[in-house]
Image 1 (cartoon, rainbow, N blue to C red):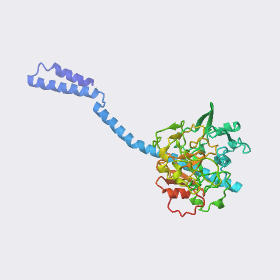
Image 2 (image 1 turned 180 degrees about the vertical axis):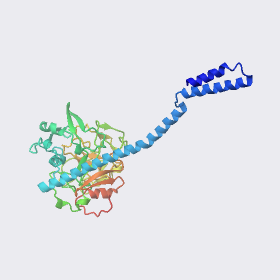
Image 3 (image 1 turned 90 degrees about the horizontal axis):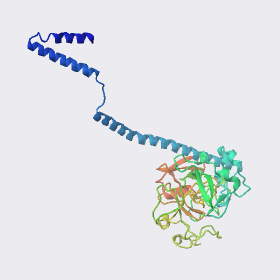
Image 4 (image 1 turned 90 degrees about the vertical axis):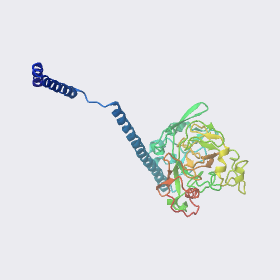
Length: 400
């Protein structure tokens, strides 16, 4: 660098003595040398246009990759959900092997749930030891259920095997009854008490499901075959307080609320199974005994406006507490296909339900042979009902 400037200086000193053409040539040489020197020391940087182009490219790449990442995460959550379903199915089988019968459904709205009785077979013996089946588990009127004080701590404990990782509902649900707050561990996997066809939705009597009130089903009772009989299915846990919406309007899909459809039906115990119709809209579906049978729910549900949430003191939402024996809380049926646009309809202590999930295209169902099948939303309604019966005698093919 020193030699270069010395050379230029010597040239400059001799410019005045040179002829004018040579003098101008040397000046141009000096100017170009100076420009090159300045350019070589200038910091390289992006222009604004280049920067905007780079940002746009990054945005496009993120837009392309983010759905793929989310899909991969959901696939992992769905696999974990399937594993949970399998664990519960195997627990049911192991219980039957130990006691020569499946766990009973328990007394309607007052007893321990099937899930509670499965705890020792899910490596939850410590929580199970907090329970005492010789005592009443739940007490109070139907619209203000509270647990036996001795079991509050146990029922408030969330159990990972009972929870689908895709469900955004909190693992612990708070319910306020007469000014007292109770915490309940939720449950996504509900035990089937049948197809709910005919009068099989009255679980106070023998139904066509794996369980019902004080049931004592055994493997030998599964006449339709263990690979074609559903024991349990996943559902969406309820959230929020009870709400009222205009007739025909629904909450956000896949419905974290259940629809109260009790009006027009009596909850009284009759000489034969079933809920007696007392008015519209159920009366049009009364059988010869006056019991509601095989209602067309698409013509029924739009007339009701009351929705049950996760904070409902009646515990009529889905999956509020794994320890409560109530239908739609820990028990379900297969009257509707997975993720039906028709909401789960509660009628007093029972109702018309179906599998639900956040997996989008279907839901996981656990079968009596210990297998788990991901059943599509598009499955025929008659097939999903047949799968939930243990003795319907249906011939079922290609339901997967």
